[in-house]
Length: 382
Image 1: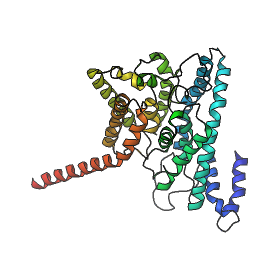
Image 2: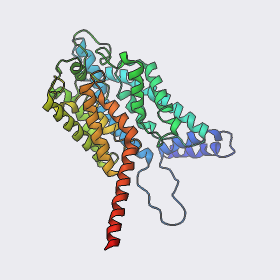
Image 3: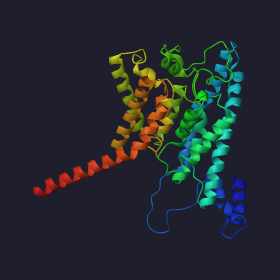
Image 4: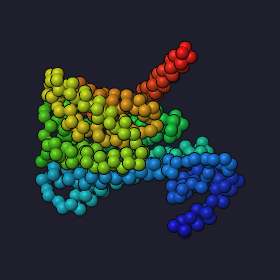
């Protein structure tokens, strides 16, 4: 890697203050710090303690955690295509079919999103934010494989500009940008985000193409087995179908302390509580769906692991994380069952709780303050 380091050292004077390409300083810093750990220190005097991992490394860990779901999603895109045509292709033929269909989605997401990020950084004379490293990969993974690329590009523009940059960039947004992109697509182009035709690329006539959530929404039972839903061999968004692959990513995030286990756990507890409540009521077929089946349909598991745990848009207090996650699980199942027009309740549940996360933290902190004041009064009285 010495030749890479020498290359950056040679180019650095060209972007320093007063140099010809000074206006590209933030762009240069973004590429350099992505390749090497920053040489900036907390200070020259006194004791300073810093974590061993910075924001770029944290984002890199999340990207690695997404890889199992992404790779399986690529294979499943090919698998669903050949299955719909009644054909049986080999492993590599199936995988590479999905790979070449998903790769353009990833390229469009990163090219459009990073172009906007770099443009805003140059205009503001700030360093390029690292948050889009994850967002740029998540957006294609939560979209149907048949989504037109121009619509995906529009969703990325809306998510980055309206969902993040207008609030100041990474760390200042109050809603998850990837979910903002999906919400934009869902409400702007509903025919490309619902129905039976969008979940299988170049669908044949051998299968219906409906997802388990779509089947339940029209009043029929899910045709896929629990095994297929758990492993992911069902129609759906690129990266959301395989619970096994998602759990592998969750293990990495929990081991490295990148994501909050409190939020993940409370989401599943909230979903189970609402599912069991509906099972007791049992007014229709959707209410009779076992609570654990909700975890394996749609984006419930993916949202709980990769989007609800976003450290910027989620609650920050420990108690607040329990409340925040529990309400996401409750709202996701509630929206699915009571409003079949929005079968993917996880998206709306997370966006809704993103809005209320600061309020949850406010009341948690306020309760702690009042409790401490009460203890002080009691101690003083004694």
